[in-house]
Image 1 (cartoon, helix red, strand yellow):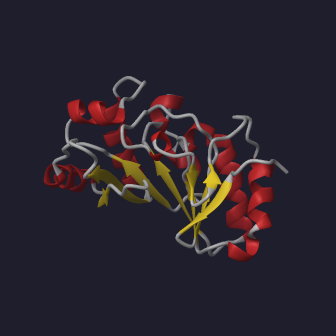
Image 2 (tube, rainbow, N blue to C red):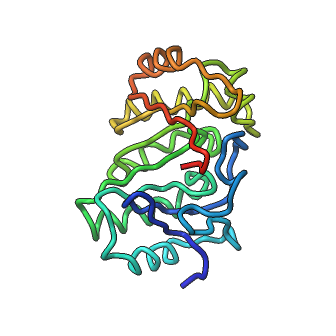
Length: 207
């Protein structure tokens, strides 16, 4: 069993922290302001995370497993796609009533140069996808992506997730310093893509 935190609990829900790698460097990212979430240090000492490590930590808190488990940590969980799939398969087989959500920046199809969503059917129930802004210019200013065509890729990912039948929510963060995001325009974009919308007001502690 590993000695770092791949699993943590926030507001009664179980979260899985697979990686510290990400294709964004969002200005509001919690990792920019603190090392921990509810006391769990989410900076990993290795990127060589294996599914069995995650499963061992999940089993260590099996009495606390909630109805929803979320892949979300100090990185982009879809960058560890195969590990995510293996862990999700384990959860679905052992805890079939558990809902699985992935909080993602929506870059996966750009990263892997294929549509990965069909591979996740039956494993993932929900996606929460960071739209972050109403234009590419604003998105790039807030998200600081290191991948080309990121904003259009995010919108395409949202649309495709809806098409594939996932419970899909597009999110924005508002109230962070002087960064302005037009909430109403983001709602319009989200409706056009067929997804749900959620505003995440910025909190000083990041969550």
